[in-house]
Length: 216
Image (tube, rainbow, N blue to C red; front, side, top):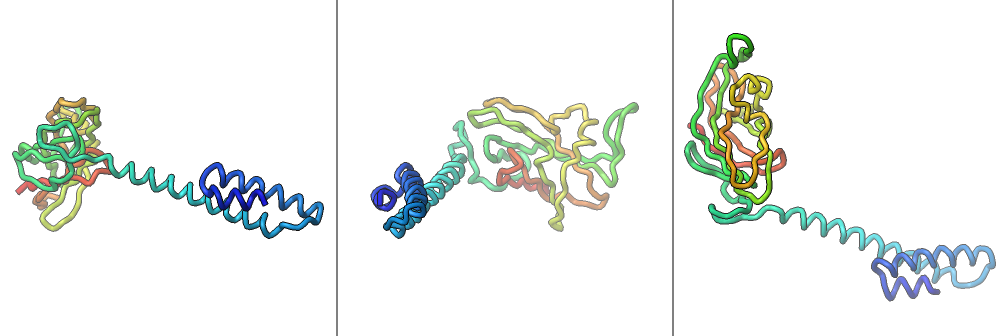
């Protein structure tokens, strides 16, 4: 009986836990003694478990909702995050998360490195020169491997971190940037000789939505 009353009066949290405990105790006692009230005990157990399941589901939803509110849109001079701007061009600052990106130019090479240590491209190296500024309020790591290059046919190319290690400026590999600071980086891609780079998709992390910059 106590399990049923607790299940009705306080379905969530502590009442649900007590309803489950009392329900199991009551069912066990009824089995031993043959007393009446098994139906109420089972009903209390059901209500208790429903309350616990509802509380768990509410907690999961609360965590999911709070996690989805982490991105903030602010004015260009603010210190928050912005994901409203989804495209840009060479020389135009664009933002994704905590980073403001400005692609300054592109270039191509057959190999990177020096006379002692170098790497030859499979096709040609496309180097995208970019300024990365942290406009957020926390340190953020820039990684070249999070960036993606697209050609005019829509083919996607990943950054070549191994080849980037041969560059004098290896910022494209991995760089921790504090709020307000900026770095000059080069993101390097190994693409076929006849490839015409159309755009680059820049990300402040591997899981961000990204921002597209036209390279034409």
